[in-house]
Amino acid sequence: MTSEEIKDQVYDMGKKARAAALALAVLSEEKKNEILRAIAGGIRSAAPQILEANAKDIAAGEARGLTSAMLDRLRLDADRLEAVAAGVEKVATLPDPVGEILGEWERPNGIRIQQLRVPIGVIGIIYESRPNVTSDAAVLCLKSGNATILRGGSEAIHSNRALAGALQAGGEKAGLPEGAIQLIPFTDRESVAVMAGMDKYLDLIIPRGGKGLIETVVSLARMPVIKHYDGICHAYIHPEADLEMAVGIVVDSKTQKPSVCNALETLLVDEAIAGEFLPKVARALASKNVELRGDEETCALIDAKAATEEDWSTEYLDYILAIKVVPSMQAAIDHINEYSSQHTEVIVTSNSEAAETFLSQIDSACVFHNVSTRFSDGEEFGFGAEIGISTDKLHARGPMGLRELTSYQYRVRGEGQLKAP
Picture 1 (cartoon, rainbow, N blue to C red):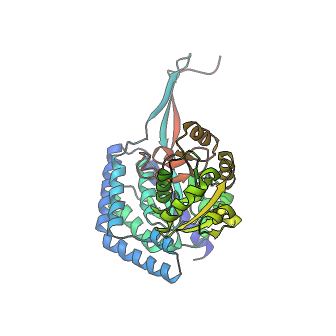
Picture 2: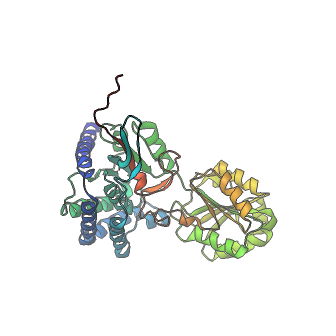
Picture 3: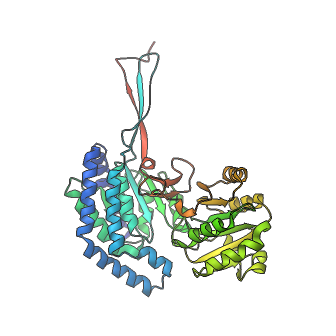
């Protein structure tokens, strides 16, 4: 396609999305829930076609030499697809944030002011790898009254097309407005730049992917961007940690699902307990086939490859863990604040005072005490499905659920009051 053809098609999608957003904004909670249940039915009905499309993406990914972790992020099967449909139904059970009154008051002149939640409008979502994001993003935007334009990665293009088609077709049976859920059907990188410049129709862009993608979107966007940077998550093992608990937290954080953004990537161990703890955790990680990369002190205590400077700022998304021995909690805090992507960090300790110091001095969206990093998730927080984990500080931070996909509006009512004296 030519540049002009790409621009024309994406702008046409923007016009349809704007019209759909206006229609969605006035739908009742009951109607939106009815549409969501119809969407779940649409996914189940189209399951054979979706899985067939996913098989094409998997075959192409294997031919391109994608890692096992990347292929796992890409793969759908009957159970995973049923989980996607069930996730849509679960969103239908969540409280609708639209219309929630955030505050109301009356001024001395009798004017009554009300602040309440409203949809953002049209949200563009640019993402890579996982086709389930197509469903998660679309249905969360729908429940919060927003239209969405999706732009997935080339590695999942067949899966995304099939899923997006099933979502819109299923929803239309229950009254979903045309253009409420749209997927850009081609993978030309130019479409990202077109979306970023389409501020007439897009109210917000959420990029989910590698640092290069996010930096490109941020540099081009003419509308607000909510960033989802790397998940370089850390665990610090304090001298007063329960070592058995610490081993369990580290193993779960790293291996329960290593291909996701809340998986552990760097382990910091206080030198006071390194000699006792590192052999324990190394044995546990070896049983899960985790490759260890350590600093000089770590390599002197356990069998690990020598870590490089790059390892401290790498999101592996794989069975690889960087390990560093630190002289103190402050050294751990300093390391995290220098290398973290401000996603999720955890301290393991029985000392509550030390834990509170750690939690207050770490500049990340989520800070945990004695909890696996894998709990950094919208569903685990009770939000239901999430749109992602924001590493920004304004508007939305951490797991983004329905409330984070709304804005607010002031509604002012009076009886003819005039400003003039």
